[in-house]
Amino acid sequence: MTTDSPSVGKSGLLDHLQHEVAVFARRAEQTRLGGVGQVRNSMDRAAYLLLNRLDKEGPMGVKALAASMGIDSSTVTRQVAPLVESGLVKRTSHPEDGRAVVLQLSPRGQARLDEVRSSRRELMAQLTEDWAPKEREDFCTLLTRFNAALSARQAAGGGASEEIPPAS
Image (cartoon, rainbow, N blue to C red; front, top):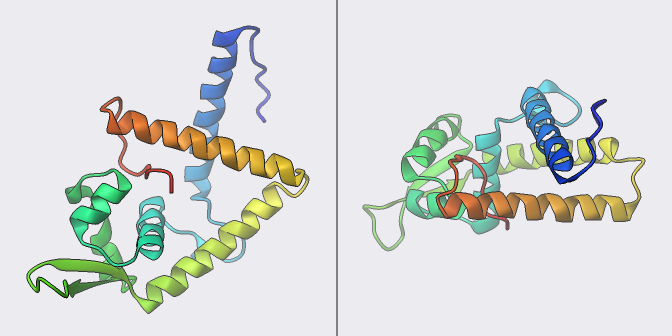
């Protein structure tokens, strides 16, 4: 929590909320939520979200991946290029249409994603170690709801965002 205290009333609370969200975004970006342990356990946010989506939904084309994440195909193409180059993602031909390209996690990508997830999980455990289990659950529920509202706003054309995927 920051040292700023909210003013009385709705606008004061909303001012406090927007400030805390801004502080959170800055701190998350500064650490890239790198987790604990070695520096190599950190990962770019866009890379993490792409790898995570491929892991959860399986191999898919650029257009399907873009739609799944709520971003445009050119953004996915740009963000996936270094992942292919580094061997974390494989490009293969579509089994039914050899002209189409399918993206999928490589074994190296799966191992890297597992490593980063484990590190981030440990970081979350450390940051919330003095929280009751219900507080962790409530925070996760509210953060998921907040992200879903941001995603819905983006989908409705109410604001640009490149990397906030729809709630899974």
